[in-house]
Amino acid sequence: MWTAPIKLIIWDLDDSLWRGTLADGDAVVLHERRAALVRAFNAKGVVSSICSKNDFEMARAKLVDLGLWDEFVFPHIAFTPKPAAIAAIIADMQLRPANVLFVDDNPVNLGEVRHALPEIHTLDIRRDDADDQLAGLLALQTGTRSRIDDYRMLERKRRDRAAAGTLSNEDFLRSCGIRACAPYLMDNLDFAPRIAELINRSNQLNYTGSRVAEADLARDIIDVVAFDSWSIFAWDNYGRYGLVGFAMVDRAAERLVHFTFSCRVMHMGVEEYALGKVRARWPDIDTSSWDGRFSRTTPDWIADRSFHDPEVRAEIFAEQLPSVAVDPAIRIMFDCQSGGIAHFSRFRPAIDFDNHPRLFALRMMTDGSHAEQHFPPLLVYGATVDYLDGRWPDQWHLLERGLYQTCVIRTCIFLIERGLRMLVVLPPEDAPEGKYRPAHNHTRERTQLFNALWRKAARENPDHVWVLDLAHLIERDDEIADVTHYHAGLLGKIAGQVDCWIEQIALGSGGEQAEAA
Image 1 (spheres, rainbow, N blue to C red):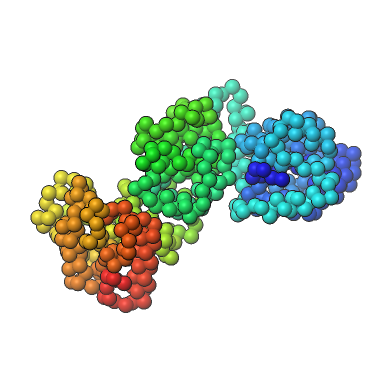
Image 2: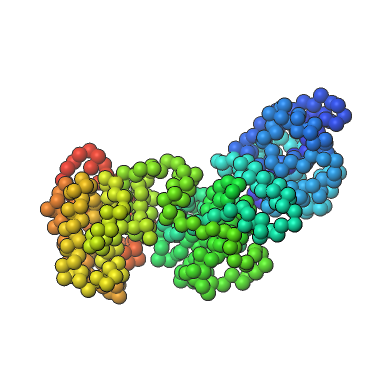
């Protein structure tokens, strides 16, 4: 019966939500099961509204008395035709008729609404199985979060927009103080469940028409060699909208795989904001098939905030990931691979992880800038990221001439002075030649030389430095894209070894090395 996901149920009142006609002076009696359904739908993310021919204040007072008024958003209670009223509710809530169910006891009302809005779903509440149909629809819902507050915020915004009169839409948006940020690459892994839900629920603003399983989405986010990804968070003077968009580019095909947004941010310019992030890296990407579907005006009313700003990140984590510790005990320093290891770790709530430009680089040991960073008691460092010349601007030619060794020694001194412990993940020395990156001087020979320096550091500092040699974990060549980028399976193995090391430290096992653990 339900050919599209239902996001909104619009209820009639008289002889629908309650027995009797309020305007006729009846002592109306609430249908308790239907009231319970309204509350249950709200809890699963399907909101309810009202379209009723009644006196507004009288109906509001009755709903307040019944403890139900706060369960509804965008109510239309007036002696006006229902088709136009319902069309206005749907437009104000930025939804599509196909995602709306209208419940009424009057066949004329139901027929008029269907005629005006052919895609809308309707239910004659007089049917013997009507309540069972609603219960069946409820059973299909998989959401776990009420959206009442989201639509309350939209209600306030709509009222203010109407009060603004002749003010242009862009000027009104400028008055709203809209801010947005766009976490990139593996910073998005933590949000994969919400992103998958957004992609799979969105129709109206799903520009690629994509659908995705959460596990497949997480795999693609992890594959930073094949895909670029951005999630979009937005907030303004009215409140926080949460995660409202997602974009993913297939690098080889140079096309958008996902470009999806929440209807809550329709007409705010968020699509063009996201496209700006995409075009910064893919200026020639083709979006011509979407011409006319959203404004291409540069949204100068949106203030771009960095996800790397500690305050911004803390606010998003508090909203999306309240289990993540404010003061983490573990830091994973593996540049763009860090998020994948954190994702698979059992200790994710205690982990902070690097992602460019929020990262540690071994070159910091040459100028002391490492002291400006926060280092919790346990560190996991992917040595391979600093085997690349690009990580050593103006110094790369000195690496094999003692500079790298000096930085390893200074790192060990720093760990000892601070009482820190670090697991160093070493890239393989026996990978196929094509997996090394000679254009960046990450050769087999350099790998062997620098790996040996870390093994020596671990032997000489057994209480502070451990090594994990990936050669003992890699079973197939296709587990790595190259010696600095790993696929999900290997990142999961690394996370397992990291977890074992953390447990080993927690149990006070001392200087036993994690190599070949």
